[in-house]
Image (cartoon, rainbow, N blue to C red; front, side):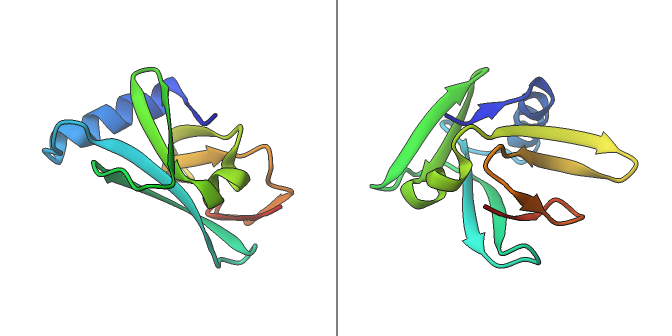
Length: 108
């Protein structure tokens, strides 16, 4: 399962409204090869499911992930930070053995 912090929920709801996203919009998360640690996170809004998608709902927010990415993201919490070191969505991934300084890439 992938969970959502209260801060991430609030910011996602705000963005969906501000960007006038269609009914049924969800957060799609995934993993791609690249970055300084080997794997990078990706996060987008979407409203179309694909055949190999797995979906989860936490705090009223639907999270969708493809089967391959799920293997790297199981147990992850999506959070949001607005701190001095930058603001944005943050992945708290218990499977990551190493992360880069900016937090956008990881390895397992």
